Length: 180
Image (cartoon, rainbow, N blue to C red):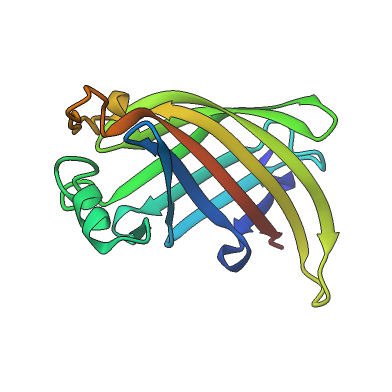
């Protein structure tokens, strides 16, 4: 990308959600989110092909609607927020694969462990809001294995079921504002 033709976009946190889901006791799903995050997109074209995307979430902003569970997730059993207060993502590829569909590939770092991840992105479109700001929206989904990132704690029920599944589903609805 040529530096003089880059368009920079920043995440509109008031209109974005960073959610995750994980199976609990095999029978139900717990949903959580990060309430504090930043993200940016840099692109040199209108269709976002090959855009450079960065994302960072504050682990201490995790919210699963249970303060006890949130404290456990922040502990060394999971994220170890004291030593690793941020999780980060940096794209290596953003490819247009179909009508409004993209494949987002990049490096996700959690707890000091960096692994490549592949996510699906659906482009919702670009519009100008009532205040003259140009906005672009995306829905990003995918799955990761939490153990690959050092989130290894688990328990076993009397029936032999794991308390927390290894698979975590990611569900991000994000809106970006075009900068000057």
